[in-house]
Length: 490
Image 1 (cartoon, rainbow, N blue to C red):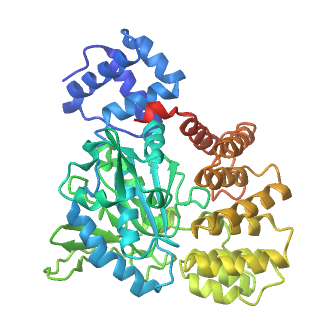
Image 2 (image 1 turned 90 degrees about the horizontal axis):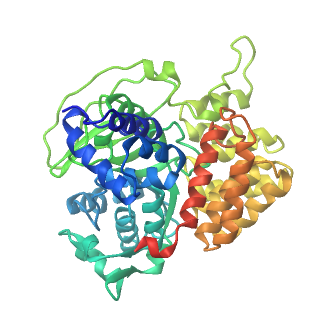
Image 3 (image 1 turned 60 degrees about the vertical axis):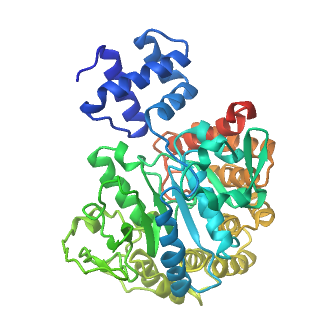
């Protein structure tokens, strides 16, 4: 079906440019109906005028995103998948990384938060609530604001697995309010999956043990899906799990995941022994318990040629082959290859070198956040003027749920360098989590203003390769979420 007015096609193209969302021709009729509904809410009858509104007002674009994406979510949706996480994924993480490891999980495209809070409930019941780190991101500022409030209607409890959430909800008139301990266990951030802004220390999207990316890939075109798959792969720790929905496209053709076939679906893992400096041979399908093995072995050497899986800090750190390698050179090479244990060991004794200390902490962070924080605290004492060490300590403390200490560390970063936008952004995230809305907004405004003053394509220091324009957009999105009136959220 063709558009009834050329402006509808222009609106969809604008949406694709801003968000990466794609709408197939066979969906034009339903897409156009959705645009008309959004236009009615915006009190606009002319499609050309509505396009101009979308270009100038974020709230209008936000409303259209919510309208055109299903946002179908409720507590413990696809309960078999949550059972698999409880029975297989969490024990696997504990076995590989130790019972003291703080599990890191990410609910990507979290909508109004039911998926992320379901994970938080599951973690609490499994004894993982602390020091687990649970990140939830979405492209819609309105739904993120609603998710942060954690107030739900009966509609969020309609699924067969939703009964598992009821012990953690209390009724308030016609709504249900989530237990505050569960609510505080989730960190909400704005993030556009279609943009090249992850993995990153600034957004917390690194070293993940578990990523849920369900019912969002169906809205992307083939090229965007491939890019998302590679970035998600890079965001996982070795051995980390990716859970997608049954309706999502397969991921094995886009990144070197292991495919794990189970009786509740096909899931994905980053290989436990993944070494990023070696040309990737795509692993065969892993046999899950009770499943027949399958064979699928493909090669894709262009992944390393593109440098997609090298941590941003080390993409240009390959030493000159014509000189003798120092232990720091070898450590950089090991880090770039994903051998974090060797990188940590090589830098362990280089305590007088601030650069080596930073690499040591970053290596440990990919292995165990608590151990990395201890090493970072000691290194920051030895190098009190190292902004990067103090910044890493703030990030690690935030991951460990030690918010008050994290806030102090972030403030030390800003004291050392008030122009560091990444420091202001991290402080904003910490203060928001602590309930200091005014302080969070001030920090995010500082981050936004510092980034706006830079060329949009300039790399922001300590941001893991994020451009100033994109970090400014993320900061503005966080401000918009904090500015959302409470009455809008119900």
